[in-house]
Amino acid sequence: METRTLDVVTTPEPIAELDRLGDEIAELAAHLDAATAHLLDLIRDFDIREGWNTGFRSCAAWLSWRVGLGPLAAREHVRVARALGGLPRLAQALARGELSYAKVRALTRVATAETEEQLLAVGRAGTAEHLERIVRGWRRVDRQAEAREAARQHASRALHVYRDDDGTVVLRGRLAPEVGALLLQALTAARETLYQRTRGAEPEADPPTMAQQQADALALLAETALHHGMDPGTAGERYQVVVHVDAAVLADADAPGQSVLEDGARVPAGTSQRLACDASRVVMRHDQEGRMLEVGARTRTIPPALRRALHHRDHGCRFPGCGVPFGQGHHIRHWAQGGPTTLSNLALLCRRHHRAVHEEGYQVDRHADGELRFRRPDGRLLPEVPPSPSVPGDPAQILRARHDAEGLRLHARTAMPGWLGERLDIGWAIDVLHPLAQR
Ligand SMILES: [Zn+2]
Ligand SMILES: [Zn+2]
Image 1: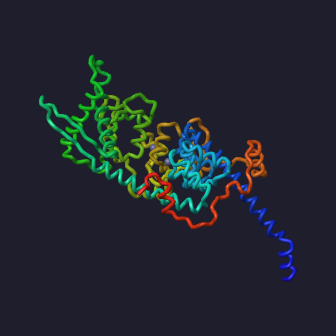
Image 2: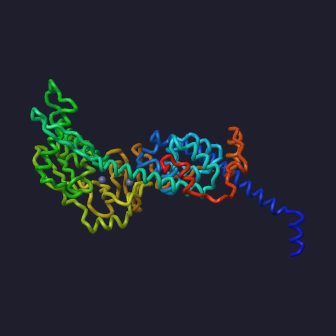
Image 3: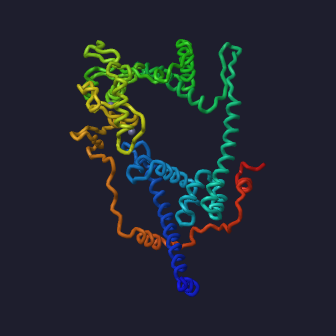
């Protein structure tokens, strides 16, 4: 005991050694942060160029599948990568290893081009924990401003309708954004209904202008609303699609025949196969002479008990890397081709991937061992878990060498906060920093 105490006092070698170990951790962490900046650059580029759009729902879903990041971490990587595209100062600070990824992640939740500079200074001075608290306070001020703005928009909603001297009716108004979106969607649908029906006929000598088409669309909306007694219907009915499809087309997408929606819009055979696949939709099959063969393929609907068993077995969409918890029952062999509605012939797919399988050339089949195999349109296998890339023996050394070559001198104090231990007054910090917080 005595010799050890003496040892520490005279030669503080173990402490010096731990200091070196700490420095090594800090230096390597700075290297990893600088490399993360590079990784985020690549992700941003991949995202913009939609490299992930090969059957995946999003860049994050692809990243989670390909790299093995948790879904939340994958979404955060994509969010931060996108945000840094417009925040060059924060991006540079990360690339130079001066700000940790955790700090940059927190700051990108609130930073804008206008506030980036100030927040960068905060990021340099404070610890990661300070930043989390400052960002939380900052968002509270942002949310209050947002809530005020939404309340203002709601209060300013108005529709003025009055009759002009010549008897025409004049409209002027203002709608909240989501109500406006609903109206625009309805107008677009009505316009398409009106002007798709006349398409294919003689080209009109004097085609209506966009403004005239909008007026006609509004008239159709009014008629439809009155006709249906102002009943918006249940959610299921509202989105119900009626497909008229020739029996041959349903069995074989390449067969000649019609495949149209109720409003006359022609749809690809693959689409009508998908809509009929989980036949909770109304499908009318026709024979060669156009006679109705079968009304309401509701009879093909997967019975509730089977659907429960399907959900229980598959949990969610079975497409590699997806796992969305709800979906449609896909007949691996279509019922129009004689495939049975049984558990072994069904697989749960989300809407996105049901489309991928019916309309984008992706293939799925079940092997003898009961496992599903997905293939890309080019026939290549799409594995559930991709093989990991081979990593060289000492990746840290490679990072150091690359950063040295880029002239980046990283050391144990590169990312050290300027904070000297004083108490953090969040309220004061937000008041001083946030542009909307001036009282
Ligand atoms: Zn299907
Ligand atoms: Zn899916």
